[in-house]
Length: 180
Image 1 (cartoon, rainbow, N blue to C red):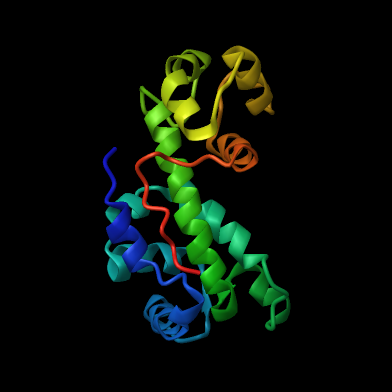
Image 2 (cartoon, one colour):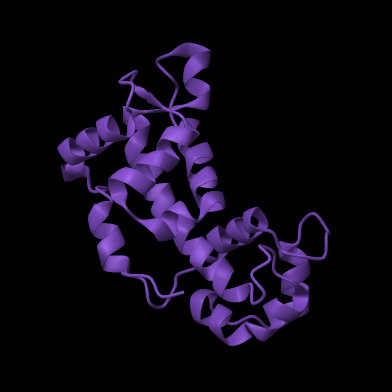
């Protein structure tokens, strides 16, 4: 999975100084102009406004970023805002989307058979690349068991993300030059 990280970062106005660009993008994502974005509107915006197919196809990353952002600030719309992203949550969404997409790429690079779950064999076979992202792991089987919190015998994307956050996972080929 080759990703043009520079192009992706350029399309995501996450810097504090990019407030006007973010507002314009939010309005493009919000076709009915009601000031809130549903998950469907966000997905459509990623496809039609950002034109980033790699992220559009990473549905689990989009869903996790959406979930994180929609609960990041107390809604000004009461209970209605709990299921939507407001403009003031949009920067957080874009930052989370970039991060969860990086985790998605790492997850897919480890998921050799592309079944959206990582087996113990895939995890062990990915040892060298995984260690490039998170540092040395002494016992891959024990680490796998720690990650597989539901005990299902596979690492699912949400489990992988929790682990990746704790390990400060960083892909070797992504462009980390994100402006503040």
